[in-house]
Length: 199
Image (cartoon, rainbow, N blue to C red; front, side, top):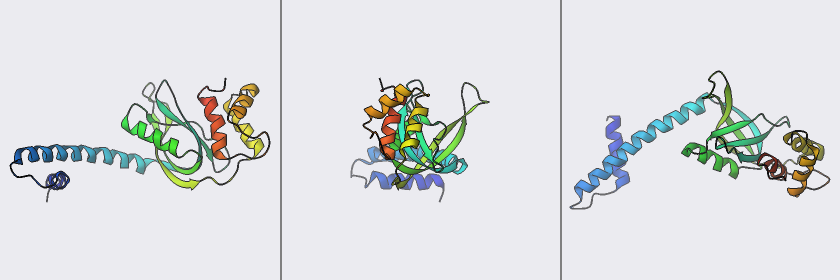
């Protein structure tokens, strides 16, 4: 059986039984579904190719913000060494794939994830590459607290060394003055800085 015949059979199953007297309408629906499945096959093949070429690393997802200029999501990740990862972005948020990845990342804030990352050449300068996330696998909630000094160091780093901005972000996110914080609490402060909400 050819691949096209397989597509038509799958489309016919999706369309359901043909109502008596509506053969032409049913055939048009099967034809449209067959084309949709063919196109979907190409999309899935590209996704699988990106995944197979991606490098992987575990991390805790602390926050997700969206860049206005590019519409890309920006993920703030803490790796297993306890360091903030360099910037990693999603596909553009004005594409279906980019919007879906931003939504998935936002749902995984405060959790441990396996990050599938590729290096993408910049359209403006193909010689330079950016880190782009192509998939996130949920590894469960982050149960380990982050120490006070470490957490405050992250916030200060995100604030570019601006102590007043770091303090405002910490307070506005309702983080405790003393003691460890959760990944979700820390993410709240970092998100405020990156989104420019700590005024």
